[in-house]
Image 1 (spheres, helix red, strand yellow):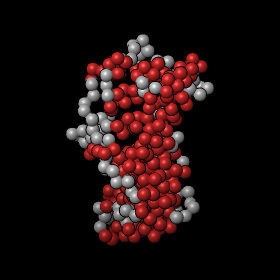
Image 2 (tube, helix red, strand yellow):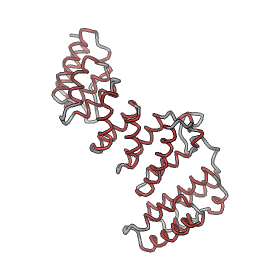
Image 3 (tube, rainbow, N blue to C red):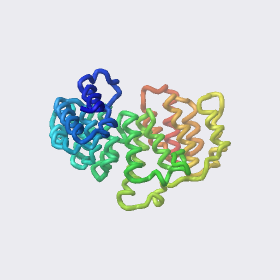
Image 4 (cartoon, rainbow, N blue to C red):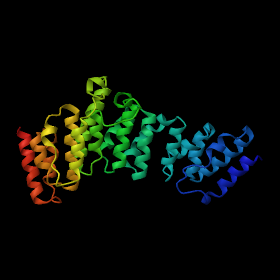
Length: 315
């Protein structure tokens, strides 16, 4: 027995020595084993997986142990509590298409962590079922699930090159970045607004339209002076929003500025309703009208929101 195998087997026998954050055993060392040692290690991992050891399941996947597929498939289709982890392992092993329906169900109907992990898996699988699930969970109650779903749709449709800067980074210079902000809101009406628009874009992509035809492109650099003034006003109630300057903006920059102001409703900022009405932000009217009915907001603010929604809805 090599020192490497001895170390790995000791790790299997003493899992309590690992951190709770460790999802796997030392698969990097496992990848380096000789053929004979690998056989022994894989057999032990399979035995541990059959007993419900989720670290063993993922380790088998990361060392590309195709010989474990029968065990993982059986677990993935069973009703044992660790079946979801077996499905994750199958995705890592490149067999996600076999269980995409189940993984889509996990994304919609599992516990919080399970939904997050399933949403992270679905883009690796791709296809209509995965895309439909990602679109569905854009309105999930959990922020992390919604954001992972947005990221997943960007990945599965190959959108990053269309919205990234020269360094390959996103920097809020595209329309769908505004939707990501809305999806991250604590207020469900804004989440619904973002999800509806994102679903419309992905429906267009599925129908064969190009990202450019749908407006999924990088825009010109923002007006730094205007946005610096807006940022200074966002969290300081005594500083007025630079509404006259924002009113001169067009396209994405205007939409982005209005979104930044609207997000202040999460803090029940009393300036928001009047500001959005003055800017003529008609696209936000449905969300404002819905929030105006929430009893958790002060009556004065609800009245202002209702008035603004009414004005925007008829303008």
